[in-house]
Image (cartoon, rainbow, N blue to C red; front, side, top):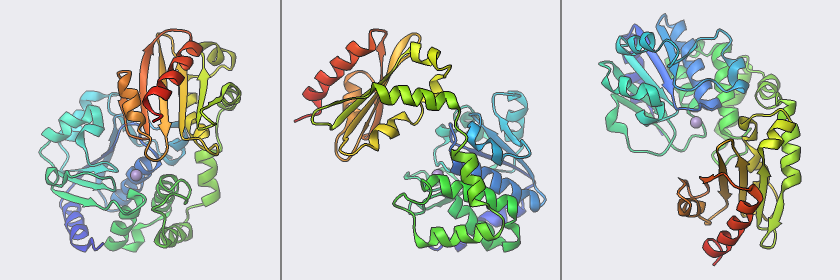
Amino acid sequence: MNYKKTFKQIINLISKSKNIVLTTHLIPDGDAIGCELAFYHYLKAKGKKVNIINHSTTPDNYKFLDTRKVIKLFRENKEKNIKLIEKADLIFLLDTNEYDRTKGLSEYITKAQSKKICIDHHLGNNGKLFDVYLSDTEVPATAILLYKLIKFDNEKYINKNVAVNLYAGIMTDTGSFRFPRTTAETFIICADLVKKGADPVAIYEETYNKLKKEKIKLLGKFIDSLTFHNNNSLAIGVITQQDLKNYNAEVHDIEGFSTVIMSIEGIKVGIVIVEMKNDIKCSFRSKGNINVRNFAKYFGGGGHKNAAGATFPLQNPHHLKNKLIKYYNKLLVK
Ligand SMILES: [Mn+2]
């Protein structure tokens, strides 16, 4: 895709602006944080006043990218952050094309008088809501678009800080270079980022190899709890309040457990049952055409076709498991 005209528009708007605000979607991933920080360093090098304001805190495993601790949490100093949004000349939405996904910031950004630019790679049709819309759903990461934009402006701006953050964005959004949108160009760009100072070993190590031992112990318990049904096409794991206590773990430590289930050969549907303090949360994952969204909806939940969830009243989690197996046969197995 040829973005030259859009690049020129963006660089032109940047040159006319003094105060620039960057934000991204809630629960930011590596691409979101990497893009914000790479763009921050680029804009600082161009002499701009830049503020990154996010709705969510930065996940622990991406905090190493924010070496100067420049990312502001919107709800901390809310009044001050609203003023920063109001007086911005230019606001960038990175790695999302929906104002709603900036959550708390959304109403202030939409009201703001500034020009608004979206740089993103998600599906969507929100171009008319922005002054400039740089979107390409073919690229594996928004960081690819930023790399091209910054290089188009001037290659000298791809300094070490920019390179590290863009590399982190691309590495995480490609699942470490194995997701379908990974191309030869992805590697060529990453080779250049490594040349410019991104350390692939260190960035991987910081991002993925700093798991808390409590999480790993809990994962062990979770794997032990797995039961297999319907010719090993359905697997269910349970985490109880007692497990969390025993392993000194927290609910957020359960993140990613469903991916473990889905990595088992032959599994088409995976269910994670988590006993919370006041209710039970279930997450459903599926492959191909099996629609777990409808399954979740049946229980008052929701989500996407291959990833959904529902909340149940407090009860014995193992009884709930048996109920879900029964409904699984009724609703999902034809
Ligand atoms: Mn992304």
